[in-house]
Length: 323
Image 1 (tube, rainbow, N blue to C red):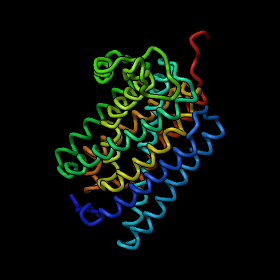
Image 2 (cartoon, rainbow, N blue to C red):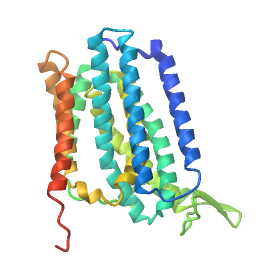
Image 3 (cartoon, rainbow, N blue to C red):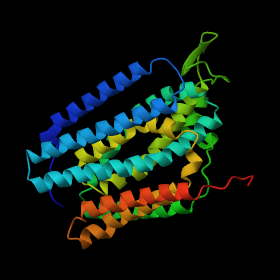
Image 4 (cartoon, rainbow, N blue to C red):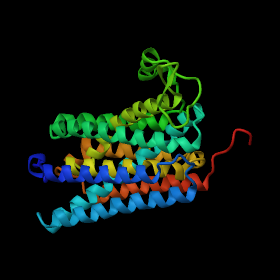
């Protein structure tokens, strides 16, 4: 395995500066959405476009940053790997949003409170992704680990393609069961609050239960998505930054797609294909190509699979149960 372009010991200041930037962006977002309100389609579209623009702007800056330290070919490789990692994480996150929609529907969470839950859900996801990526970076350069990740992604992709409609069973979640054992849970919502005092005793509200369910669900998704991004780049800095930008845009994307989840019913097959392809890349294609499968081809295959599944979903709408 070749050495990292951006070793942490040398580029710790970049990680620190990037993390500080994300904290500022999250603080601005929380200030803008301080009052609980329903996120309309137009607001979600503008926010989604803004997060995508920020990600592409960062990618452009990362390209020039790499160009100033390495040659033009390496800088181009860095830029394409960020784009591929961003596209993989963003696409797989859409599958996550389907589950989020089911959770909100199951607990009848009012739309005006959903943004607050998603905000703190994303905050927790960023922390757990950073831990997952740090662990992955420590072992990803061991060849048998790469092979194991590849085989795992192939298995996960096949399972995703074969699984039936998603369902949620909160009563089976160990974190939810633990929360019920440790704290009394109110039967009704208390506005946007996660905890409330009832007769001088602290209770948790159903909104906190929803947040815990979202967090544990995202951790399970990270087990698939983080290795998938490592499948298109071995650079921890690129994995970290592309993951963070993809996750930051999740809330806006959720409200953009809310109510239209069933429209993209073929998307899961496109995502399953992406996981299988990335798994094959890690387990076989990289070695076949002499150590690194061309990132341009990988990016094209991933984009084509996602794009085709979206087009087919729109061309062949899902039949309703009553039709």
